[in-house]
Length: 134
Image 1 (cartoon, rainbow, N blue to C red):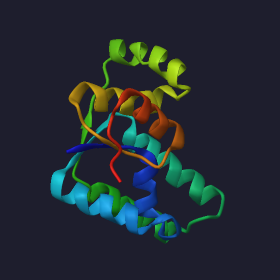
Image 2: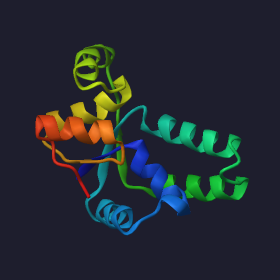
Image 3: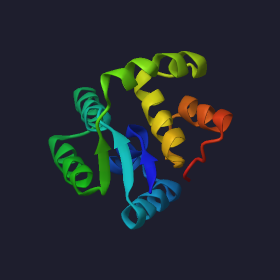
């Protein structure tokens, strides 16, 4: 099992972002399962919304993306208020959004690697010793 963030999830939804590496991570996810914080589905949905509003994708693409995301074996973990408020410090320290600090926090607390295409989150992972899934 490993942590899955929205950046790699969206890459699985868009043909122009799919690579051999992202496909390999998707195959690994199907075998091992993943975990994500409670905001993950909202972050993915927001990415789809902005891709549509910018004309990057069609309604059909959004429909296929919904089907892909619904089928992913990702356990969505609730985020308690106290946990969310404690993410401000690591977010500031690593120059991350609090949303990305939540992925990092799950990886650190559970000893899991993180699959991401976000460079800042990847840099924070390297800094604290959280493995990157590639």
